[in-house]
Length: 107
Image (cartoon, rainbow, N blue to C red; front, side, top):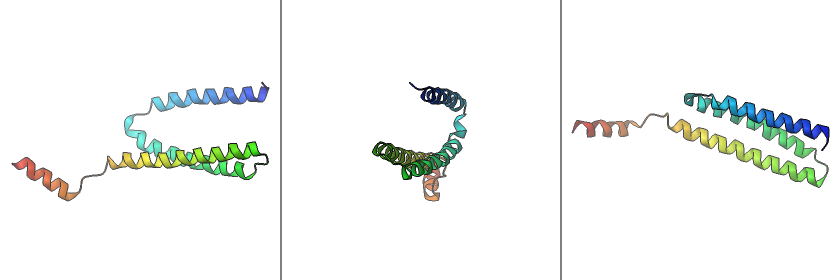
């Protein structure tokens, strides 16, 4: 194994540990803003994957670049879907639903 691959692997593993420790300490109320921020970061990752795919010269680079674009796209779309669902929890109910609820309580 070359020295560069060992260095890249070490940085990757250490960043994974740091990321897990940081996320574990985030309170539940901040998960929605944190998810929105991470979606923006994943958008940048998608752009980077497309740039790398555009400069690919060998078929192996093209396959890996294509996989990177697909996975980054899935990550961005999935993140926005999860964020949208989380934000639905904070929306107030419609006036007709509130009225029906208060009428039901009065009986």
